[in-house]
Image 1 (cartoon, rainbow, N blue to C red):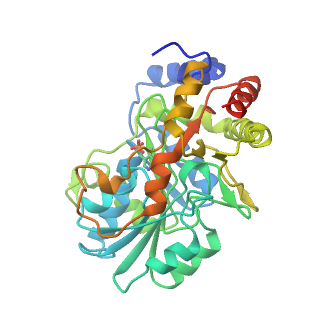
Image 2: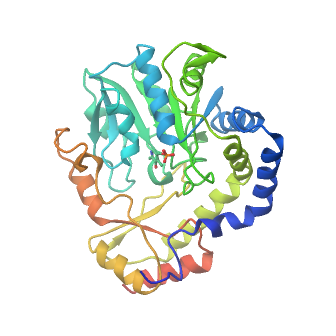
Length: 368
Ligand SMILES: *Cc1c(COP(=O)(O)O)cnc(C)c1O
């Protein structure tokens, strides 16, 4: 592949403005001699809980483990059992679903709304059955799925609500931040996420102190105190050095969100093409634009065209989880909206570009 003038994502460039602060924080951890379960991790947990307006957080090894720890805890606590149905968006990344099937839960895939690319209330309502025990709200691409009020309704009806906030840190609806809506939320700090570690990291957030204590034990060999194991656990802890990196980045979350919003605004103001539909902007919502995904029937041609012009793009995601070899034939139903999205979706660069580069990309797209 030719070198891109405007690469889809250049993480070194994205992190460069924070280099002095990151290096100072890394040096602080290296000198401290404390590399796990230390003060940086504890401080990050408080900061994440505060961000979501929740009682507590447990820092984890990654976002997938954050989801697994929540699901396994609910299984162990008797709130979920094998065979229970859990509603998930059909177009989510496979990491939302792996923690369900790992514990014998049945993912019920629901087609999203084609404008928002996320589940809406009507779609979820239609999919509820007597066997539905939980709903997973995945705030894909940084756009909140439904509302805090709707999540509260589901909970009042006896359903567990789990939020997959991997792509949506800082997003909100009507002033209610995602991660504060459900019974528990999982965040990912994978390096490409809006707040990315310099490696893997994640977090569980909740108001349920019993759940948080159990998650904390599970993530630490099942140990609730030293050499005392209440369950057969894992090692799913966050490194102290990653917590320190993330605390630096979290201080700049407002700026990072504003930067992405301004690039998204540029795209939505300039791009006018009869064959390209832009992602919906939602009233009342703060969207944080983890991706800027557009739909185009000639998606692959559009990608090739942009690549020739030196602009990198990516596809999130080319294949739905239910057609992956590991799940093929295991879910019943049809998902025409998701099938269409997978063929037509393409993410424009947003993670590390300048305003001028967004303008140039938008004008190039208009000439496609
Ligand atoms: C990134 C992501 C995950 C998994 O997070 P990791 O930290 O990569 O394990 C889960 N769900 C969604 C929607 C994601 O985008």
